[in-house]
Amino acid sequence: GEFGYELLGHLPHVFAECARGKLGKTAALEGMEPFYFFNLGDHKVIRGARDPYCGIPSGPWNSSNIHVRTDLVPDGETWLPPPYKQFFANDVFRFVSSTAQHRGFVVVGNKYRWEWNAPPTNVFDVRTLRQVFLALERAGYRVVYVRTTSELFEPREERDLTPREQDLKDYGHTGDFEMLAKEFPSVLTLQTIVDAVSANLRNASAIPRETLVNSVMLGLLANAEKYVAVQGGDSALYHYFCKEAHVFVNKACQRAQELRAGDVHWWHRLTEDQR
Image (tube, rainbow, N blue to C red):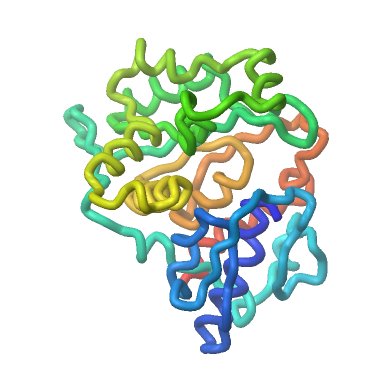
């Protein structure tokens, strides 16, 4: 199923089973190993692609749809979010601003991808990103910008554009990375951080790229002070690390189920229900 579905529905269920001493084998797509840190000794890695129409693979829900009201979320015995913030806290990703405030860093998450057979809907354009970066820098924060791209997982020179990626290119590139290089040189990106980590690992080539990216991402989120994102699976992930995150949703999107159903209003439990 979708990344967000796995985060919201499946992982809290299997971790609850683990906490009760009843968890057996787990399985997930390659790259998801860090999210199953509590069961790596009995975890199977599956190579393949996600099926966005699959729903929740298993759990205490009465439906394969997780877009539900707060009062319909399962209880702690069958739904317990893994303590990612505690487990992935580290002394490696400590980015402090050079301003007088010496504040930590804020993760700004964006996405620019084809979804539900349509061009991007929930996305920060360059103008909005510029305003966000300016506001955060003026407030004394360092910024880490996260937008996953095909190049992040596989260098462009080693692959060809798929028809859908070509459609996105024709639709118009966001120009966000170009804007960062020109106007906000102090802003770090997930791409540069992953590349730096990879360059300092002796066995980097033996680690699947997606596993490395997700490991770095979890380490960054564990140390960040604040989070700003557009709606999507990544915004659900951010709620594992804070009681408050700022998530922007395009109300004109016909598929804005999270907004209409109100399920974003219980995502705070991803942090508060951790044990």
